[in-house]
Length: 524
Length: 103
Image (tube, rainbow over all chains, first blue to last red):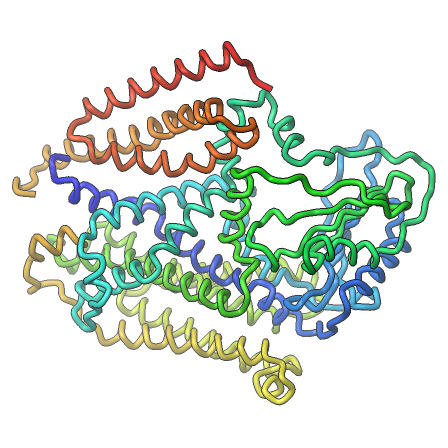
């Protein structure tokens, strides 16, 4: 601890990075994929093709819910949009007095409808939404704990970025320095280039990520002013309190004119979602929220109408500066507003971040292998990091490919199909971990990378064999989603294959390596 | 780096690191929490606004404190810094809530 500031920061960077690097890699990768969650969902539900008028589809969805769920507490409707051709509805079933709400299976309180309000038979899948949720909820564990774990990881990431910047003094010069085939130096360059490449993005995405769950991680700002957090949320979002049904039946007004009014109020922006509370009752309200695609802020404006009267009851109150800032911070994290160009930039930056974390993890072992007392027989900690690196860096991509394959290969009528798609992702991941543990580490890298590449190659092939939409039909009919998806799979396969080839050819520099000079030690 | 590592040297170093890590992670969090609470009470805005503004700044404060703790020359300075921040912020928050109350 008596070293210079830069050295202590280098130390901090190394160890904060290693502690949560594996989890951060998974968060980066699934978060990156989640920028295309709607597209992934569309690919995973190839049955969906309809593209309906949002206003008509919403009315049709309300008619569907009116017929089937007349006494629900509330209905939620997401009309079709450019990125999702179907109408998604879900409802909150009527509460039974004196009975706690039972956990229901997903399909029992939700439906996917076409433009005419008819349920569409689609394969059961959680699609891209699962990748989005895994990004901060993980899986196989209570959500609340997962979010704390993820938050701690993000905080480590923030510290790793800051200490990394301080450590790295020649940040600009090194951006133009990528030396291939130089062992440790190449890994360091790869780490630096990907880190500097989108540094503002990493800082932004880490900080705003923490902000999305800030009131869970740092409740003290709210608690300092409010004895109960409910008072706080009531002040922020007034009128959210449940109004009991009056028992007087009253039909709902037609929703299309309301959507037109809302759209006019928002300067032409579309409606993102519709919520109907106490449907069919005289106390019913219809809340319209602005589509997330038209403004950066995540907290879209909303308008509340009386259900039976259609009268404007409430408009989203003017936000203050801090609230607007928070809304924008969450908004730029999720990137729902982004059009195609910006969405791809988000995606590429995310890939850059994934590689940055991955190369940082590998660098940890590469740097230390040369200095081991006996490089042929590394100590347990070193071997553990080595193996976990393989499992984390190759396991998840292999898992993702398997997830896509399972979507096409599992029987349509299978029980708990969606859950088994997810299970197959983790089985493949576990498979790579197992392989990494039983094989010599260099072979394990080559073999698992090749296997992951093969899985990604298999996705377009299996897709072409199992569903009628693929790259060729897409090119002919202008079904660009299927063209882009297949190309993305091939690109990923190529990248993994290239990595496998690199790993196979790399010469281990263990015995005769010169001791790194001081400058390298500091900048590493 | 100049001194060759010995067994006791390494053990001592690890102890130092552990102390710093605990000071940074736990001490840093507590000081951040107090600082955020004080900010939320003292910022001249609506209560909800001030709470949110302070919360938004919290992670920058926390990260800054962590970096500072690892930067500090000695553990004594870390303890003195954390201790005085705790006392000062804690007293300010206590007085503020005592006189102003909460909603």
